[in-house]
Image (spheres, rainbow, N blue to C red):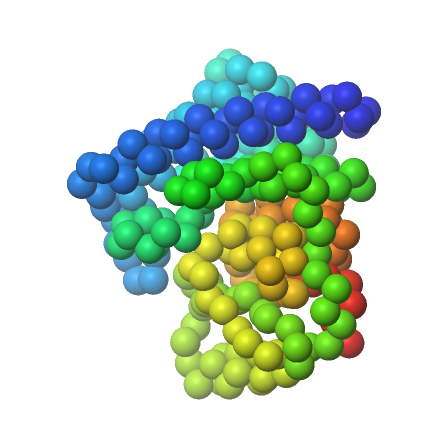
Length: 255
């Protein structure tokens, strides 16, 4: 993809994310409608409102395929698939439970990937009007100002952001592995929004993010931000379609 098309695509993603963010801010002043709450997962009417705002914009301005958390693989208006090489990966509201409980850590998240490779990402913290944007190989920004990953070099001085994915088995062995993997870090933070966590890695607030079996739409945009900001990411397939094992970091603390 040529640089001009990448920049145009970033502009489209920004337009879609900010449109969805505006709609979600308005919903914060109304009663939060829960469409379903099963196990560890929750689905809100707000997710669907934000998704429509994003999909309408992407369909109007882009021919790329779309994978979205609520709608799955989205077809064009004529029933055909979009570009099969490049694909938008959308989480219209990352941090739905936080949103429903008045915990102000949530965002809209839109990534563009080329196959299994992140190309660009937009994460919009609409509650605080913080717009993270990044193009892999070109740089990352927060509200137009350049950002980069931190320069902390030791795990013992580092903050790790992580979480418990919706489909994680909370048995003793899994929890013991979780504890083992976080022991070397100075502090651990669970923000309840993977996209926000990765944006914090990109701007150097935390040094690393790790989560296994996390849905690709939760991390697609954030991974692009980390790479654009000078970080690295180890990505492998998780259990089942559209799930990944992710470790994103500032490139200095990996051992």
